[in-house]
Image (tube, rainbow, N blue to C red):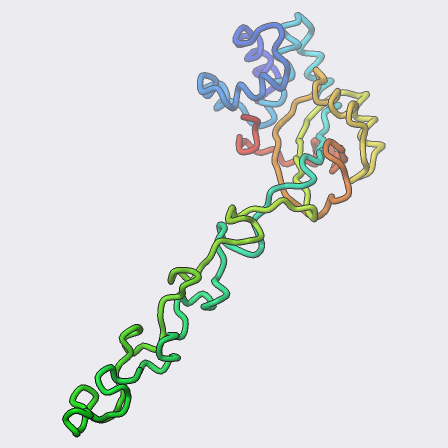
Length: 272
């Protein structure tokens, strides 16, 4: 959108926001309030950024024409990493959803029949395994003289339902107490915080720092509430890359001039 058109739009719609609306509030309102959808549809990603910065400036009765030029000249992006949880809850490596393969039956749900030792046969109940009807003095009619019959416990299969897992083939996982999750001290949960700003003071601060350099916690929090800064969104990840830090530690991930950015019109990472 051309500059004069955007400035005109700011002036016409500034009354949608009160005098205390921050750039981050304006930005998130555009994405998350359905009433602003017609307005959002008219703007490119860059327009949304400029609009969000200019609304508070306009509502403080300051010159938005001059501010537009300063924003365009000085705007840059910062991605920070906050160590959010040093013992995150992760999937248990020994099971699936709290269940693991039964050690007794190797996950089949069946074990060798204890009654027939797995061969599917047992001594004939009528002749005691002799194969003879002693009273009649002749061959046993039930086993036809073999002295063996199909096992009544496993019906000749040689296997029976596993008593340990009740035939399921799975048992509750001992490591995670059947919850499917454990607390890991080998990984950390981090939050990536994406900002865009035009503050000269903070630009000097971040551009002097190196990627993965630890930053002062209070400084970074003050930066997030800076009236010249927008928090674009937060994403989370559990990783092994940042172990050894403490909860609340802040690191610089990357700093870029906006000419190096590929701003996309999406709300997938916008704050709820």
